[in-house]
Length: 270
Length: 322
Image (cartoon, rainbow over all chains, first blue to last red; front, side, top):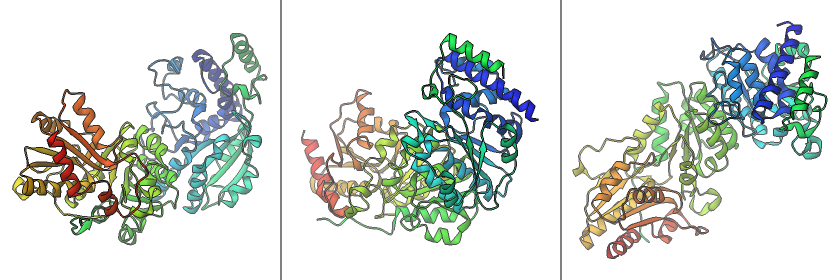
């Protein structure tokens, strides 16, 4: 897709994320809005994944480690044709498969996530399997910044580098806010690039809302042969809606009717 | 203190030898280890098939997550680690990445129960049946003898759902079944094995505690004229309800034995099944009490808590009297 087409998609995705969270009266709004541009680029310009090849062993794999931002993934998968978009009207409703975290009962979703610090280990196993099979499968995960404190992630960082998993790419949705406050106040992650480089990863920074830059960087993998790639995507929690941007209460806040209308009007103007 | 009869091989040795034999022809078989290939007796496997080993280092959460990823890609991943760490440190990975996600990982808990003896509680797994029983979508098996172990490993390779295999360090007999009971080679996951027939009392046990139950049955027969049935209930989940009902219908007392806490394991599993189906046989759960475990070797700890031929004989005589 061209950058212009991607921009239009991002606008629609944000509108839909908001629509279905508002309808469900539940969801992780801020994080879905911060990572939706990353998913847009992954599914429209990077991953060789489609409803037609979703059972093929040679498809790329995407596992969302920050499972709570599932609404962004639902909207993108619906747009790609994995299931009818109107299914999302059942989001978080009784007996709906569209629950508040990813599950592989939904067409297009690879793994069940939700507990934090799980995605990278699973992806590392997938990447090892792909290497053993000498396949060209690439494996991607999106991590949240809050979950970077999970020790299991650092076990996986060491493992992936030791095994030279250059078919693995981890993208950090670095909106810098978690439910208690700024990461910097909860448990500081910095200097993150130096830490990850010391762990043996090839690291790049990117503006996580710059669709052109994201496309370019995610299509230039691996950054270094023999090393797993880490993308520090600098993002804004609640991106696109003025009153939500960088405001923690929208981590899982649901807008009132008035604020919902205001948000949709703001998005329309983009 | 009695010496428990020892035979040729520990079940975890039989596990590694069986897997080694199968790995030659099935390159999808992988062992995933957490610096545990030595305790898992997998060094010969690793030397012979280095490409079929994934080493994660001492990182049990990553061990299970990586194994889940491998299994999702069609690999027959055996995640091997001491059961004390595997079923506690990585419990969330077992629950989410393996069972909930339906990745058919074969979780192998080695040196289970109190195999590590004097190394203490950090190295004991007396909770693993309890925690795993409460997780949906996992088969739980603790074989008694070498024969059950080999058959179990062969079946586990082909399973397309999660399974937990629990092995101990002690040398166990090749086959605990009395010859008169016919073909000894049958083994089916989910079906208890009757090792000895008897109509006065039944021992239902698993893993290494089947051995002292069998010895107690011998003493009870020879010295007290009490004829005991002995069942290896190797599979805790799914439990063999059919066999347990058949035993209970005869009305005889039942003793369960396990190398596990008396809470949440085989005993409570059998008790729950019986009570909810209207049975009220005299019943006793033998295992490790809800207390700080006494220090000592496995043999000494078993002796302390009466998980021995003599201890189980006394328990049986008491239960019959009631």
